[in-house]
Image (tube, rainbow, N blue to C red):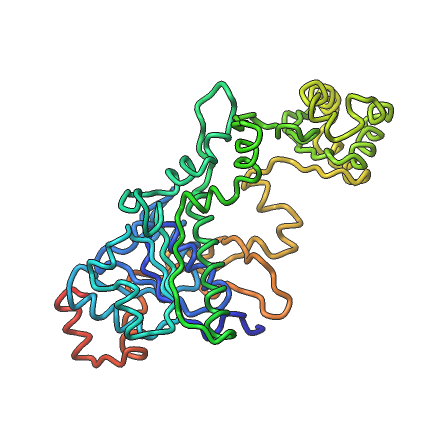
Length: 399
């Protein structure tokens, strides 16, 4: 096993559920020592989320907390806050996703913590950021997706805006948190800088990915609307029916690709038609073009269409369910379906590591651990607590 790129970094994770813990998982997958702090006696709510729970461990927990060490602390008590501060003193990075002001109330503000640890990098993920008029509002990923503009343009125009099938707002915030922390590590360790905190807002993380929606409104007065499966002014780029009742996604919107696609359909003259000859023209006539293509694809099964598209160099692919993904040869070849031993669930499939580094790849060492599984290791070996001190913390229900 090659060395991992983040070996030597220690991160304390105070977050819960999705955004903070996914940020921590990204560090853990690439070799950082991630110490996850959970409420004593309760644990992260994610332990009970998802489709199934067994012995205090959900399937979601197994993947979200893989490669982490888990300890417990009652942060509502002074002794717990003191213990957390001692732990954070030993860390390079702290990740938290409490509502702004919560840590300050526990004496764990960035200003407090950097007195003990001047090089500390603190990732703060919240609904609306650490300042501004919405600072104190409770914020979930779903609200961030709504107020970040994503849900307004998702779905069909005649239906209410739907949710995307995953917690995309939380995951985006986690990724921006990971990105910000690594920039701060570089600044601290390479440029001779100091520690700092990274302020990540859920709604801003979504808004940052909204492409040209803002300049379109600013200069054209255009408010992008829900358009179902099509992308306005970009054609052909849509879902098309097949003869076996499935849908294939075809993206032939570049001029040279569209010419190849027209050849595959047996109508090369379409690519020379002024209505379809250029990207702009196809965008203006995308509805009739999509109808033409859909009429053609319905005559072929998915496998036939995929072969034709691949041979012509036209981007295309089926819309996969998870049942399709787990048997796809590309996923399997690139090690994206990993089998990991879980102490509760036995052997369990986990998604593989992204991205793939050639010299220092990430890996999965273990699945999400049991509540407080690493208490003794961390408190005795890292913080040098005695057996007597440890037993007292247990008796006082601090850990």
